[in-house]
Image (cartoon, rainbow, N blue to C red; front, side, top):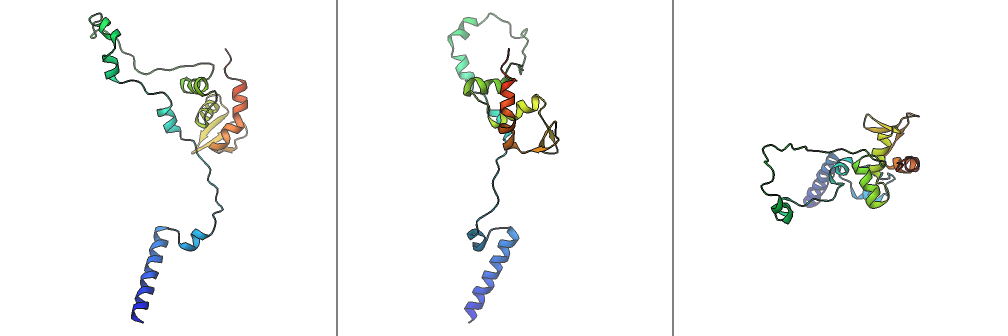
Length: 156
């Protein structure tokens, strides 16, 4: 009798801990979830990881062409420009790279071009249709705007 009361109190304490930590109980796990997962665009990785990796300093210093250039320039007098920009028929360098290498835009590329061309605006954490002022979830941008973007892009 004493052992069962102890087990019951331990079970009650664990259940209250689960509720406090918002962990699903066995009953909640058995019930199917009606919520549907909707993917969001990962713009931060799109801006950072969309280009192929470049060889490091070791690859540059080992090249035969570098040996030929040694002593030709006074590096104290050389102007160094960092960064770059591009405007092309496919938008900017990221969207052009996507179209030339994959033949289609990713979700993030489509969002960027829709934004650059004024079809959507970013407002309070959401993409909003510029004409109707209706909120457009990330996953709906590509099916909604891609055809029109492709019709008006890539033209020289």
